[in-house]
Length: 178
Image (tube, rainbow, N blue to C red; front, side, top):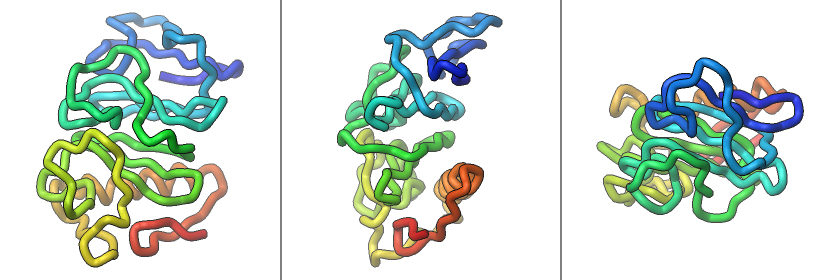
């Protein structure tokens, strides 16, 4: 998927749970006529931030709560609002979960919680709603050596996305600080 200069969102390729396209080699506009500021894709879904209110919308595979829309099913071919009504800066999708950074620089994660991969100590195994990373037991950052480093990878991708935009941050007890 990608954004055109007029802020419309277009996707192409095999649908494979990533969006509204079945198998097109030419880009097809994402339904709804919305304008977007950014888009990120993962193995099973796509998320984009609306330009009108910085809300996060995801679509694709909803297994284990990957979409953050409060449910684990069904899969969605059109954008669904991530719960909470937050304003987002960016998001990243991994194989089993997703994380994002809010405008207040707090980190929130959702999706599979197998072996604690989203870093939230008391989350259920399938977590369809975003949870703040500061809910980690002890208040510190989680160990990131579980599940091949899914959480570590997500946090590094988030930090890299912001650094590319000229915002350099450091992690401090589950939040980001300038």
